[in-house]
Image 1 (tube, rainbow, N blue to C red):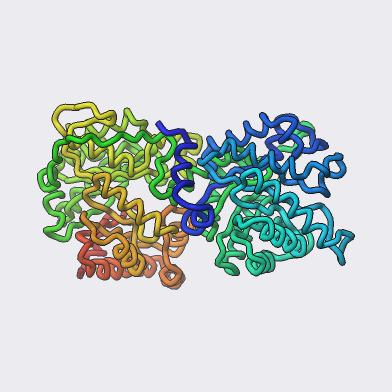
Image 2: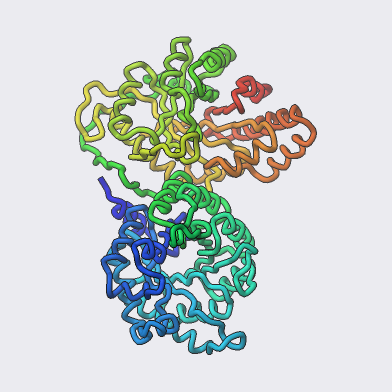
Length: 625
């Protein structure tokens, strides 16, 4: 079983930090200062001196962040410049403290994470607004950065800056001291201004002109304010954007400063940062390894790293000799239809209570109207519902063919294997393998997520069962006949990662694919062009919108969903007229998308998700097509 450091090292060895932050999402660590404060280090201490006097404590915090899933470890050197060290009598040890700070982080990160050399402001205004001489300040930054470079930093993180002249001096120093990538991060107040009145737009434009590789916001007030700043910066610059806010504002509790924003709250905002354009997400004051762990979980659901095996995933080497699995046509009726006719599947959610009659009766009605198979979701949006396996058995008794969604979220490896073998035994053999939404999004946010593997790993394991081998490579007897489907999102935030994951799913043994709902067929066309030749049938996802509010919710709050602005505007105009007009417009939009998608030869069917249990809406979409 791979440890988290092993996992991240696979990512780090594949690309440089510059490349990673350009084409994927990078998770940074959280606070160092407040973590040291929580360990009993008083605020009047020089935290940077701990690199020499208590290196074990600093190393322990780095290790906790790495184990939580951080891909960037930030050095304990925020105030290690000659101006900040002088009151402690340490201004002659700048090089030593910074070098040791970088060495401690490097010793933990090794090849498993990038080390960011932390550089904070010097603590005063530059001339002519203040007494500090600009060339001397630039020299102080250069002195500090040289120590970080000597200690093995991979990038320089200029953090919590307020004034443009000081940021300019720091950027020039970083450029003259090394060729490492540089992140320029500003801190803003509730008015979305730095403490000297710089706006997010001014900060982003200035940092880009001065040559920053990454531009962002850190510290500040909390995630909610940081979100607007990210959105405003994203409109100004094409550079990668970083978002590392505090865990809200601190409160004094029993004479200690406590940050009250929960890990789940911070992680939810990490999702919003990414959707708004951020490429690096993490935390600042008050964030802990638990915050980073939750951020990592959210990021993993949205944009899993390329070809990375996540913590807890078991990788089983392929055995040289293996039996050939049955072809899909011999596994299920659906497998025999795919590629020979345009297949239609409709999704039905399991009930929240104990009465399955509406779902079963709806499935029978749809079957009688010519629908080929019923998809049964597995706890969509982490909601608490009847088991999809139980509902599938009830539908199967009525002669309805089902596609059972099989989620990685709720089962450990042993349970997954047991359930897959059980599904095969009772004849539920069309299985759609999905990773699943985090519990924090659903009805029981305190529920524990398992996530031993993601959908790629589970597809690989299920494929092994189809040749008579379990996850450890042991013989299980007669091979299973599971017809294995997977998902894909043509509208993914990072299409490069989505394309790579789709290819990995196919390599792992996927036999058909259902896409996320498609509204902009241009996104589907781009995705198909990137994955051709496509060796498995594709079913395009179609979700009729019910209202403008429904469209906004799906676009902003459901992972993996992206609804173009022009579609949302159509729904807004229709909703302003009436509910009936809005529902009709949603059907019309769905028909347009389906009709356009059918023109692609790779699309062998559709997967309709009727809103709010309105099964008849699926039939309305199909009318005239």
